[in-house]
Length: 239
Image (cartoon, rainbow, N blue to C red; front, side, top):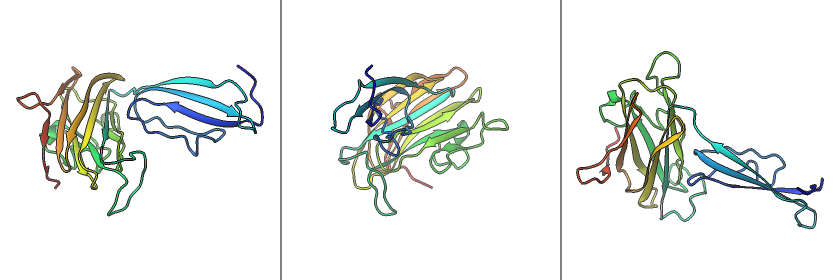
């Protein structure tokens, strides 16, 4: 590659996997920004450098990073809300949000299919629970909660329990006036994508039961109604 000018101004960019909304911090023009990937997949980073006249002072540099999960279970929730014209903006208050709020839920078998169980449902209110042996290896943890549109939200678990059948759910907590959303759930086992259920239509306050995960067989099964469609409960009650 060409030799870059010492006085050059950097411009970072990245091609991200579908659903990733990470940004460079503090900015894409910082000399050494940080970037936190938030979904599994391939990230292609590019650096262009410009001289004082605004011309590229050297050939662009590219670097490809494969992001995966070394946990036994990794579940991602993404969604899009057609009524939200800008799903990258963030923020809000007790009475307003810049985007819709959809939540990922992960149930222990002892929940018996009941969501919002304080001990057996891992979600935004209880992002880490003590389910397994002493320590954190058998505990689920919600590592990202997005309250203003798009996601992702992700859940991880290092050591699932033998004989367990976990249930993955998606609850439309608050549409904040943006209307219906289309949710996507991805389930990974030791970093390998086992199923991706795309663009399931959900309405405000509804709950979609998406997948069952059995262990130690690592069997991932979609939860469906008799007609083969997704199992969605409108107006799911919050305790």
